[in-house]
Image 1 (cartoon, rainbow, N blue to C red):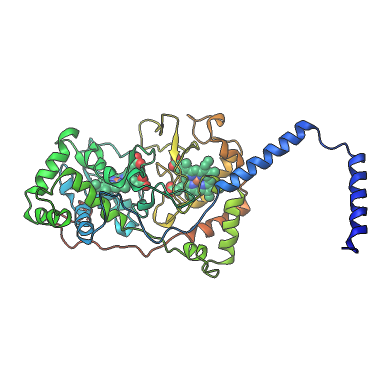
Image 2: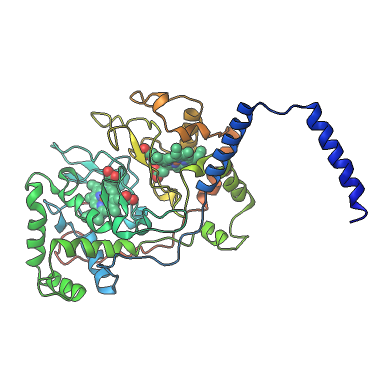
Length: 402
Ligand code: HEC
Ligand code: HEC
């Protein structure tokens, strides 16, 4: 104490002198600095990232059971759910393609072939599905926030979050004209038609009864519940990055660590945050349109906003963005370099309409390599890829894909 006292006095004196010599920043400047610091703190709080939980939650009225999951798997692969009995969920979300497909926008009704080789049969009057198919992997966690909280009954679904929960989502493709319904049936009747078909197959009647322990168990609701239960088991929560976040410092390489730091530093984590690398909010980026579509896709609330994509398992999900218009990760990063520099890549979206957080992006060409390495540490191939040998309808497993 005695030794530090004189030096403290000198320090105070110096400080006093300094303040006298320099009247200090103007009040406005102070205010601006304060605002900037506040903004930085806000962004920092926003950009938290963690490992995925090791357990999944189900809605209260749809607990998981092995019977339900196996029934859901059969339904997922069975084209009996489509109007013409030729398209299954697995047609566009196949385990060999990470439960997505290597196609920019999907082909459902009147299509043939698998993934990137899928085309329309001739003659054809069915339009493309206007968006890129998400992977089903980890949709169990849709909506999870930076504190690992989520409500499965309210989980946001689709690029414009127009549906909530896996249970409700599962019925949508069946009703959609170009995805599964086709010409033969009206939207209002197709679900009843499908349920009647399932009821006519004794094996399905048995499997629904076993899964739901009800008398008349083959219902529209239970159809959605069984598929959702199966989907909830398709998780990848043990990527090398998750291992790193749980404390294994050697799980990712030095350049991947560098990439992770850059990812946060250049502003990606302002939107791609939480354990799914998505804030599940809508942002306007002005993604280039897909030329195959006759009109621009104006997204959420017709303002060209789309949901932040998860960045897990990107190696299974090219091409990228809601319309598959960007083929590689390198091109994605070049796209961000363009928009952060104030260049819009979509003629319907002006610079002023871009999300304010786009201004915070500071990506340079030299950052791209490490960021891509880091993104690759989020791939996890250890998911359930089991394909049923046959489905109870006796139709082709996965639809018209071979
Ligand atoms: C013809 C291709 C096709 C078929 C068949 C299809 N889907 Fe999809 N799926 C898509 C496309 C495209 C999207 C994105 C659509 C959008 O966001 O507007 C999507 C989105 C989803 C999502 C949302 C994921 C997320 O993160 O928001 C789920 C879940 C899903 N599909 C499950 C299913 C189920 C279950 C079936 C069968 C009942 C099915 N799909 C049939 C193409 C297909
Ligand atoms: C302003 C919020 C925001 C910021 C900042 C942001 N993104 Fe995105 N990102 C999105 C949205 C929204 C989408 C989906 C856009 C669409 O398809 O219309 C997306 C999509 C992506 C995709 C495509 C994923 C897929 O499966 O299609 C990748 C990869 C990606 N972002 C990486 C990054 C990287 C790397 C950065 C930092 C340079 C970044 N993002 C910064 C909001 C953001």
